[in-house]
Structure formats: structure tokens, C-alpha cells
Image (tube, rainbow, N blue to C red; front, side, top):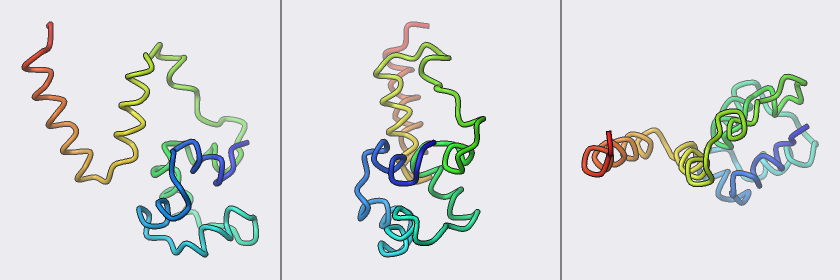
Length: 110
């Protein structure tokens, strides 16, 4: 089972960074990670998106996310790009897509 703290660390974020990106007060995030309080469903969805994990995984479901990298045979660079994309805000994601599309049109082999 992935805990909120485990997911945050795997996403490469400190508590302060996660709090700032999510808008969740730092003390609240700390209490969730320590198991003192539990997040709402909306907060779980928000954290799952921020940490690039499924809500099932944060909730401890036995149907937790499939390891996409092995199932899809992604390279380390591809996994890194996906992780970086998922860590971005919606505006950052749109920007990344524009850069990727421009790069592919300039250097793509197909």
C-alpha cells in the first residue's frame, strides 16, 4: 500500500513543495501523512493527480495502479517525461505539449 508520504516522496516533492503546488496548508498535509487526520475525497483526488498515482493506490485498493512503465515497455526517458508532465500545472502541461509537438515536427522520423 502506498501512503500519502510515500507517493509524495516518489513524486520527488518535499512537504513544502506539495503544499504550495496543491494549495493545501502544510500543517494539514503533515497531519494526513502522520495519520492524525484523513483527507477528503476531493483532497485524495488532488493528491493523486499531483503525485501521479491512482486514487485506488492512495486508498490502498488491491486494484492499485498498474505499473505503466513495464506494461507499456516505456524507456527511462519516457517514464521521466511522463512524471515531469504529471507534476506540471495545467498551463505547464499545455506548454509542454506545444514544445513536444514542435520538437516532433522538426526532428520526428515519421
